[in-house]
Image (cartoon, rainbow, N blue to C red; front, side, top):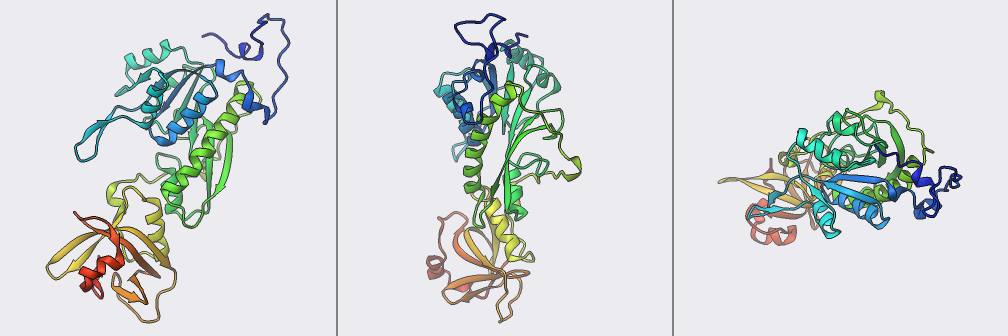
Length: 351
């Protein structure tokens, strides 16, 4: 494989082997560093998180020779094939797109033919085989949305919120055959606000991830970074998020339920079942708030009651306030509007 390391340290006018190396760039100078874009780069990613980072690389004129993303998936009521955010961004900039169903010999050979010196992976959604990891001379670099070794796996943002964490961050790491177990290149910590949801926290982390990667790459290619092994004793694994994880257990504390709401907003969202005389009705809880203390007047678990102008639900510890709800098959509405036609919900139960 062609060694691009020396090429990145020479000027375009003089590529003589006797040319003195360019001065080492400071962190501020990295924004205009012209060495890294010469590196042949393959980008792998799928969702909006990855698309924004791909856009950052494009803006910095990185030499992206191929983009790998997951195959188009059916979405919406009509179940029409939908392109990933990364595919849309790649096609917008006329970049070659690859959508392999699996990493078989043909796929691996296709990537080898691109002769990548670096592979960047951001929320791709598939585990890379060792054969892929061995291809680029500068390795495979992953941008992960947690402070590794915390929350390894596919849903680190949701898991940080589920845990009620007050901080998280971005890790730029070298990939190895394990699940987010590679050596760390750089990390950046951010605070989690009490009302952050998966949606709002993702927006913050996308911006941090883009900037941190663009700061890290020149340092890595210039060999001024020393990878740091992860502390395996501190590792935690992500819970896989599925649609039914939104089902609320009213034996949990109000704070725990609220954290679940934050973690699963907007998808898959949280829900419960309204126990009526003629059966149960699925009720999606689109917007809620909470208080840690239970009211002085005792209520049974899951019981719905009024607190002034608010509508509360008794939990194992504290109260959840319903603010916007949706009966299955109908539109979401504020709880005050819901009460106009469903006054009987007061003193009934969610279960």
